Length: 434
Ligand code: URA
Image (tube, rainbow, N blue to C red; front, top):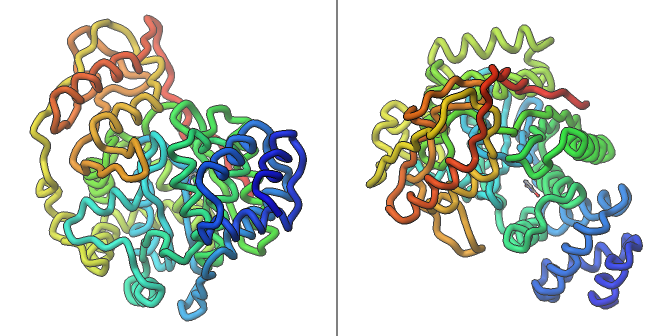
C-alpha cells in the first residue's frame, strides 16, 4: 500500500477501505509516513469528506493506535465529558469538581488549545506545580480517592490522534465533521469511561459555525458512541460569542473559581448546569434535570464544589491555595481597556476573532512548538444584548507586550457590531441529542 494512492483516492472523492484507513493510522503512528503526506490527505478529507463507515473506521483505528484504559477498578458509573472547543470555554474546570462533589466518578482526558480555541490542559497548568501527565495508575488512584482526575493524553493513549491533532492545528484542517468526531471519540473510547457527555459548540467561535453542522457533528459522535456501546449524550451550546467573560488561561481558571463560589456569569453557569445534569443522570445520581440542578445548587452554596476543586488541584501536585486566593495567579504588566467608539446595543461579537486576539497576545499557539503565556487574556465587559455608550469599556486586555496589546485592541474593536434597537440575549442551550 502507498500513501500516495490514498491521497489520490481521496482527492478524487473515493471512499478509503478499512484496510487503507488502518494502514494510514498505523504507519503514521510509527512515524513511517511524513507529515506532508498526511497534511495532503487531511486537506483532501476537508474538501471531500468521509462516509459514516470511514469515520467509524478512523475512530476505531485511532482508538486502537495505543492503550485502551481499563477503569474497572473504579466503582460506579464513570463519566467523561468533552467539548468540541470554543472561546472562553472553561466549562470542565468548574463542571468536573462540581459533579465529582456529588459522587460522580469523573475520568477526564483533556487536550491543549487548538486553533483559536483554548484547552483545559493549558488552563490547569496555571496552577503552579499542577501535573497534567498522570500515569494510568495515578489516574485510577486519584479517581478512586477523590472522585476526579484530568490528564492529558498519555503518550500511548490514542497516539495517532495526538499526532493528527497537532498537525491539523497548523494546517487549517481542524473544522471537518469526520475529523473532529473521530478525534474526540477515539480518545473518549480509549479513556474507558462508561458514559460520555459531549458539549458541541455552535456559532462563529466554534469549529462548526452553523446549527445544522453542529447537530450533524453531535449526531455523528452520539452514533459512534452507541456503536461502541457507551452511553453518549450531546448538548449543543451557543458559541456565537465567548462563553462567560474571561478568555485566556489563568483568567479563565479564576472565572471558574468564581463560579464555584456562586458568582460566575449566568451564561457560563447555564452551560455547566446543562452538562452537569446530563452527567448526574447518566451516572444514576439524579432522576431528572430539576433534581440535578438542586443538587448542584447545594454543592456550590455549601462550598463542597470549591473544596473538591482544591482537593483535585492538590492531588495533581498543584498549589491549592490559589483556589481560595485567586489573586495569587500571575499578573500581567499591562491592563488595557478597549473603549467603545459608538452608542448602541451589542448585536454581534465575532468570537473567533476574540480567540485569535488572545492568541496574538501569546495566550495560544501559532505553531506546534509555541510556548504560551498563561497570564494574558481578555475580559469581555460587554456581551450581546448589553447597552453601550461611547466611551464605555467593551473589554479589558491583560498583556505582557504593548505591541501585541495594540493589535489585540484593533481586533477586538472590529469584532463588535452594534444596533440602535434592543437586542435579545441569545439562547445558550440549543438542544440535547441522545
Ligand atoms: N477537540 C478534539 O479533541 N479534537 C478535535 O478535532 C476538535 C476538538
